[in-house]
Length: 306
Image (tube, rainbow, N blue to C red; front, side, top):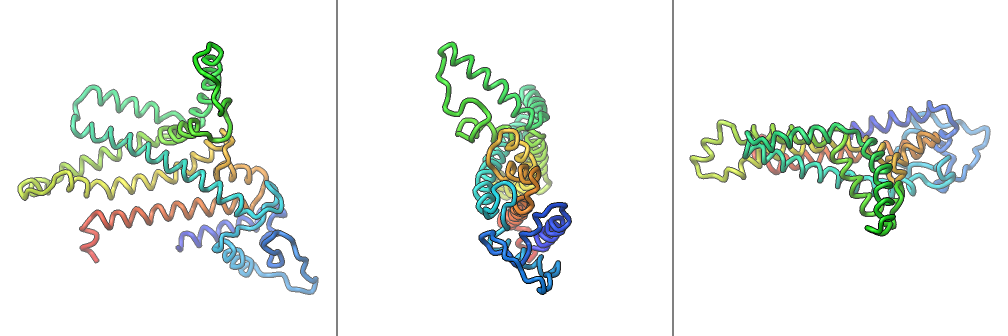
């Protein structure tokens, strides 16, 4: 909570110092519908602290002010929440794909550490993961459109409804966007290396001798040692994914919170921009809290310290 309050205070101060007239949405004389109510000249202007707590109270209720550029006069919350839903769905699927691929490769390496195939697999993971997300998007748009139109011209298939790219996120391009997010910007190789390290640490500990002698479930013990560290690495990747999704959605023109924040920054629509930043900050903090809860449930040593 302290981190979120600090983030909101920082965003508020940035808003006040922004060289635009968008700070007017902070005035206490403005109603929720966005219609400004002029205050009498004799009325004392609200202090910065009063404006901050007023704005923070509006944020708690889900009202982030009024859009001044993107859709002038429309509540920013009507733009932010649908966009956040689309983006978080994309980030969640991308994280699941990245986790599945990295975990599968890490388990295979644990079972067959000297396999030449797995060495080649590790090299390929590092190669594909080194490609930035925006370059994947460029190759998909430029190369994909040419390949689809070429095949349709030869009669191999019909032009899909979502052709040409970029366009609204239909199922097929949406899935590939999630795949680009999962693999690019170093996300896949980072999870693969960390999952491999966690599995090796969990399976080679000195306590494993006692586990085997005691007849306990070896996979269960390995999983209990692996999960807390694994979910911590996954949560750390969420912050990188939120950064990548801004580039991904901006390149594709998809109406997610990343693209919305990009446009709001370009148009200096501070109400929408700060709302997007605060929503992403809250999502990240909730993810970290979920990680701690999972670690507490899985690892009995953490419960024993209470």
